[in-house]
Length: 119
Image (cartoon, rainbow, N blue to C red; front, side):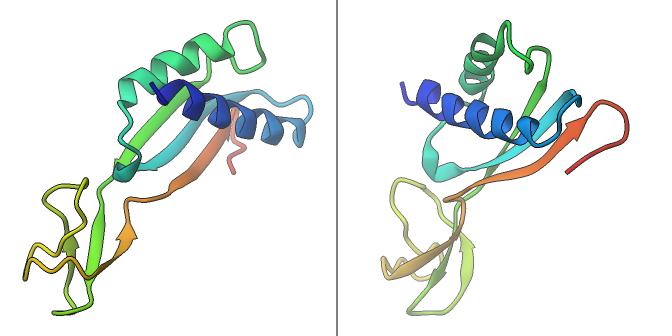
């Protein structure tokens, strides 16, 4: 169950960011997670609630958005989604000679502070 380890890393990043803004309170964090991480987003949210209980992050809303995997084919040069993210294959010409262009990263989209501040 890698959701727990993943969630701990998210909490560390958020806590590090909070240290840069003394006296502020975070209300929400938006994170885009690539499909290739194979995470159960509901499980990550559950782990997050447990991990932040009793900390400065308790009550923070974690908003996760899964980013679908897309590849660019080195044979037909088209870019598009894959049918199965376990096998990166061009859905146009079925070539395995592809480059992943999305769905393989973790991006902190925003951290919203109580009030109007957002980064």
